[in-house]
Image (cartoon, rainbow, N blue to C red; front, top):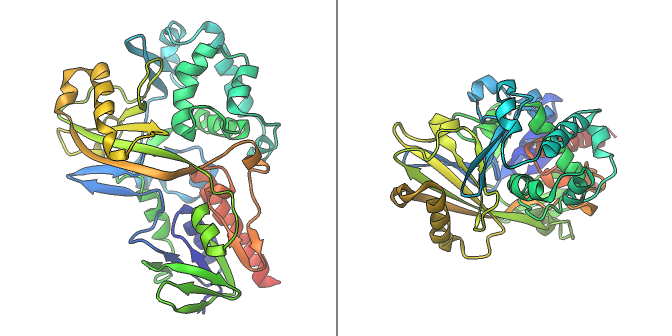
Length: 413
């Protein structure tokens, strides 16, 4: 009988399992689907790699630096900065700290004033001071309030921060806690934004490959947790001295029959195939000053060529808080893309639309006090996931490790 049953094979569950294995603690990891990874998932469609929603790896995440083999993932990085749709064209906002040769061009871009560029530099310096634990304890307010308090002009907030952070947090209103904003900005300022050659699912697969043989049970669904056991969908009762629930918050609430903070941000992502890339840049494209459903666009094959077959391009389009039916998103999206890139958009092939109702946990001010939530929920039932930490790959991995440390403590007591 395993000492620990982990329910959920996403990044938090895998991280918990790795820490248990490192300490010689027996466990089983149950995953209800046919593969590990949770929301970090990649499909292969006609030779294209389609992640479930626009996802990237921030290489500065401390947990990723500790656990992942970046060389084996064959990462390819975005160019720092962004292209911002502005006054009928594209304004380039580059990172002069990463690319000094671009400083002059950045200084004269139309999308931001000299004062706002100086404030970005001050913000960059501020968020990199101290440890993450110290950053997590800073006074907090909404991201929008923090940006205003820092003196950013409203036009720059609307043209850059709203679509950029709207894509990161799936929150264009910028209601997300300033602690999360400062954490994310620190990660962007400290490393690269990258894609693995085999898609984002290569991340959980690399981690899961290190687990003991037979410890991962795919297509094994838990339906209820009772003291000392887990009940599967087939009625089997599996004894479990300790249970770690590593699912999304709504699933955890159902399993535990408890009220948990389950509100989430949703997103819709559309993928298109094209014979030619609409732009050759390796930068994220933000909807700056134009109305429409699009928040951000990326020509993923420019960044990571393996995402598309030879001679083809892959374009991802992200919508935040899309109110219509997912299948009805394509016509207005294509209309807006035509305004940006011309008639060639009519020849693009729509590959797939992903609607993700639970794309990220909500991270309002009240949700982030504290950021790092305790793992222990009931006597010998633990929880982990990005809803227990920062809503990020870092948060999922770190919360999984915390749950494993607590499980080890309970077993020793």
